[in-house]
Amino acid sequence: MDFGRLPDLRYVDFRLPPDHPETARVLAKARATQPAPARLHVGCPIWTNKEWLGSYFPAGIKEPDYLHYYAQQFNSIELNTTHYRIPDAVTVRRWREAVGPGFKFCPKLPRSISHERELFQADDLVVTTARAFEGLGENLGWAFLQLPPHFGPEHLPRLERFLLDFPETVPLAVELRHPRWYADHGLADAVFATFEALNKTLVITDVAGRRDVLPMRLTTPVAFIRFNGHGLHSTDYQRADAWAERLAAWVAQGIHDIYFFIHQKDVRHAPVFAQYLLEKVRLLTGIVVPPPFIIPQPVQGNLFGF
Image 1: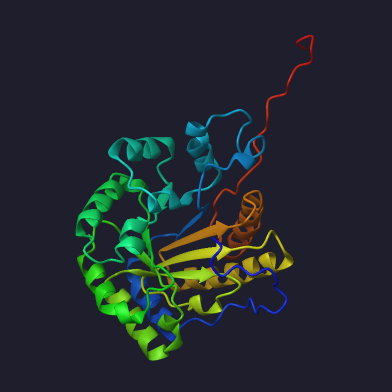
Image 2: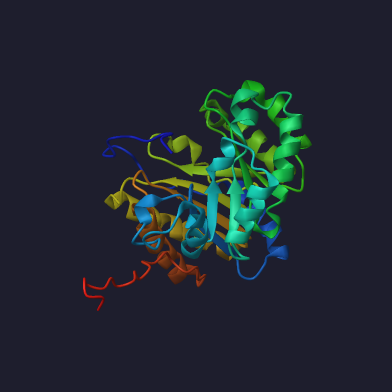
């Protein structure tokens, strides 16, 4: 995720903003139906990480096996491949069979809907996409719509119509990137209220160069967080500490689900960051999600076979 990435972090204030006043109300309302305990899902944007071969993946495995081993390391994935093509039923079934029962896919809506048609006259694509996502069954988490950076508030009526018509069988989170969605607090609050009324989750993006897309407003009892790290820089760990505290506060207030997706330019850093974050969350909440681990590799014999 290059969106908002900066080469120099010296002047970035990485502190998390305080919760939006409406967040506590949303969580209080959700407490009555609170599952026990809250569910925490952590993952990366892709599973075809060849850099993990010989560490988090066994050495020598083939690409068709990557997802199976990825699902042993993480319990969710921000599924970016669906942004570029709508998967057929055979592909979806293969994905579902490669993972365990608790694993969650969070597929990104195709760019043909979000970027090419910009939500306009996309009913045919939405129907096909929803049908494909529904094929994930119990492994479907929250799909997400990433709006292009130039899609601003002037298109709010189109966005509202799209969300009203979007199939309820596919839970949907929405990432707003244009800065004008957040510049006018009255407009932002109205949009957030619309998301809440339609049971759509606002995506929270933690990225260095765009601190405005970090509103800390939950519109459902689900947090969908996209974290852009910086190669295990010290600020990554400081931000992990802050996130662990915030997530613990939301758990105490009754949040149902947390999706936390880790973007690191070098994918070898993502499991290390996940290990640190998951341990911090465990200490504060008691929620245990097995962290990524180095897979023991088979010992190779010498030239004489022993």
